[in-house]
Image (tube, rainbow, N blue to C red; front, side, top):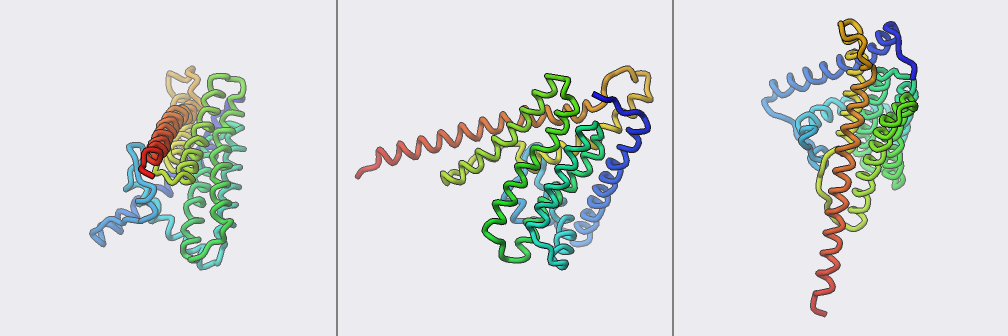
Length: 273
């Protein structure tokens, strides 16, 4: 596991600062809009997904409102939603690639671009009014691949550490199992519990851990505690949180789906013929 030099950490921090600046501008723009209009914005798409204790609905609505500017720009350029989906996949792959070398700040920035593109492709599709039948399949498939890349990059960087490898693999497994439970519930026409660590939350926490990692490393390196092996630990902690919460949520959702499916079958068997 190569340890980044101070110069490399400072270069890696550029992506973190750019992303934090963009987020700050987005918060200010949304705040000004609310103050001027005197009302908060609500979007059916966001309400449908719902918030949780890990990511509030208000934060999601603020992000969705900001993405709307980019979505309308892409729509005017007549960029196909599928093209945006594949761009999202490319940025996710790049985030995993740079994470494999320990550049987590840059990885967080690239993964944030990927996540934004993922939200914008559906937005542009709704603006067009009609999306090819295969578009939803492309979008869902891209999401699954994107879920893999950044934790995989972290796993490659820490490939000599079995505990961290297990954490990364558990995070990937939990992410896939939440998606599987949702797909299975849709097939069975069952509404699963909302749970936690849905894809939006996983993306936010991975980005947060990634962009804060070089900041923490530089702060510790400049302190009397420079001997502590903290480089990358915030990234690992974010991945650990996802591993625990995602798998717990997946088990809860799958258990609820099984219970509902069994109850439905028992009701049909007991129904008078």
